[in-house]
Length: 247
Image 1 (tube, rainbow, N blue to C red):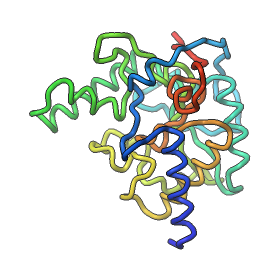
Image 2: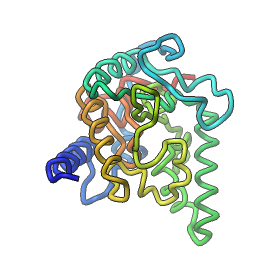
Image 3: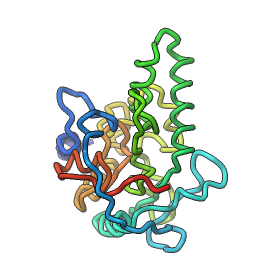
């Protein structure tokens, strides 16, 4: 890997971390108090279905068979994806792994990750298990019992990766579908040092394109980007989020 590419990757990662407020190597959680305190003013931006268009690619049903929701996102999110795709090199394009996620599925994924960590770390108490689980899955109910607004349930968040013009997945360091296998989250982190040089380069390319149109990244997951949710509002220093839970 050339020094130029190394430098570019570091600069972009720092840009993501700064945008997403990572201080002292600590990633701000999706359920940090500062994020949860962001007000939400729903702007009624409609949901659109990627099944009804052919410009942005999407993969097979994620997490569960016959998922009917994952191709749905907010209209503005879709329009911004179209803008960002134009920034990509001509041999690459986006592929959406998952958009909207129901609260029921969100809750199940949280429980599955929680139980996985519990099996691997039997000495951890409930608070530690809960906090560690939130690094990869947003809860539907916060630790204090209050209702949460998970990013995917708003239609604002997308899990995304890159493919080439022949629909082949390029090296991203970790397939999104294998996220639960990354128990310690070290490969999932946008700035992971454990991935190949090609993967670092591809993450940099994707990050540059998505950032250019206003998306923000959750640094714990290279694939998770959003526009309009509370995390976006907090990271972008907006006064309020644009999207509430879609039920």
